[in-house]
Length: 120
Length: 238
Image (cartoon, rainbow over the protein chains, first blue to last red):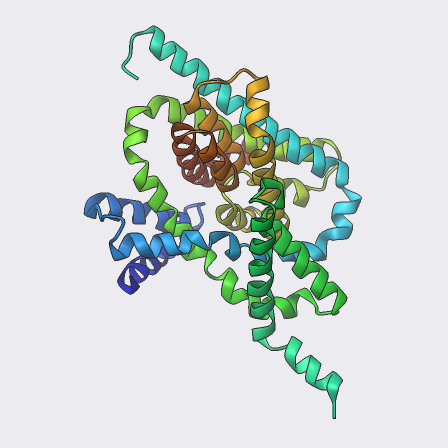
């Protein structure tokens, strides 16, 4: 499992390197994620392998890892109180539209494909 | 005996921030289990409220709390890399439904970025606030990284992402019913795009297909939002 963790850390480091070298407007860890995906698709480890177990361990505690950033909201409470209307409508409005548009596009496309007799 | 000095030695130690973070999270998961794992009793939100209250009452500045909490924050990067794992597990699903998946996620991602920025800005929100809103539908760790990159406030974005996630976990199935979106694949994609991981945990309760497509949409939307956020922002401000 330690080996798996090392692979994950190296993926992130390579991601950071690629972003710094190319100026790609994407966070380093996201490039690391794509690299990790490629490694998984090539090596096809079972769930019991160190690579998968290290990944599952990190994902199990993922919610904990964004607590420190979230607590930072204490410094912005006055700003939020001041802009409560745009924040509330922006957040829930945009959430609703993303949900509705994604659902509608996927529904229409699958109906159209079915209509053309494409295998599901 | 210098009790005040000793207390300050405790709160300024990096161990303080780390300990209250782990302790609050543990307590929050216990509370969550007591509510029968109700979506609205989300452990991360409870943890944030507990810690925010504690450091405010104890008069510990956020920066001091963060000297300890940064060790936990640091693991966001490796955990983001680990998101490749659910993507790998859904690879077969992607291949089977590729056109639907790609079209749904791309349009959903653009909608989330553009409307998040635009609605916030149009109603009088500051540019900083609108930029913090733009990446809220990417999964939380990616949202935090993107917010930093585009000039938002990562802490605000983190909370927006969590609230978007909880909203999906609580309300998405009912709203999709009202919209008459019944195809389990379309439902899963919609929930994953709008509400990432928190929505996915709810989608898994609905049925296996909905859960699988939601998990897939969560990971791919993180990627799509990373690639598209700067382009979309440049286009709508032009």
